[in-house]
Figure 1: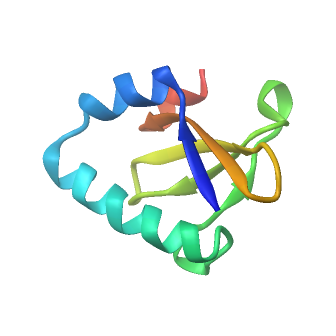
Figure 2: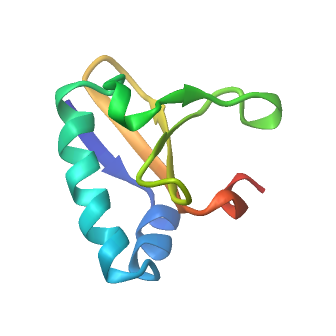
Figure 3: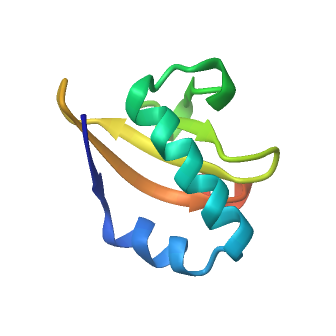
Length: 85
């Protein structure tokens, strides 16, 4: 599986605290092996974001993504719950 990082994701990622970036990298490796690994708490979003999914970095931070194809995932945003707006 390949991950495409949107410009928004890249911008938001740069602003994250260093410790969250470290955790995000660990979670990304887990995600690449199995996007539905129970440690990620992957879930489908609803409402205006019904075409997106999210998984947890920790109890506060999330990554929003979409499945583009069987082999391509796009990371759209990263941050706390404010990224859902």
